[in-house]
Length: 123
Image (tube, rainbow, N blue to C red):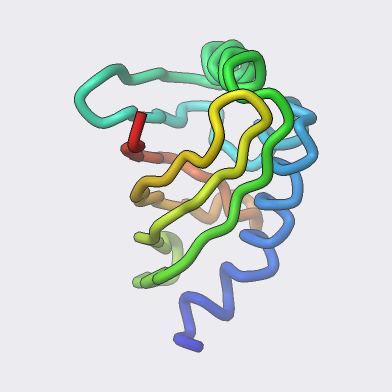
């Protein structure tokens, strides 16, 4: 495991657990207040309030779901770590959703937060 991966992995595990729990506020706590989430070619969403609404929309579209990541590549510096990976989400309403994503995590006040998140999907 690379150094950036070993640094970020505990936070990433907690983030994945929060996403899979369906508790949007918990997942949102891993995002920087000025985070941007980009659905490649479709839309961009800025800031926690808007992200909370986006997560709620995802929840309504997908129903219960569980995501896993694979082929993760980490790169980083002292205050930023990027991850590029593939994801598979098994959903109650849409079946299997697959795609690629990249995130930039920023260390702020000793905590790692997503500042930039870009993804695509097979929908």
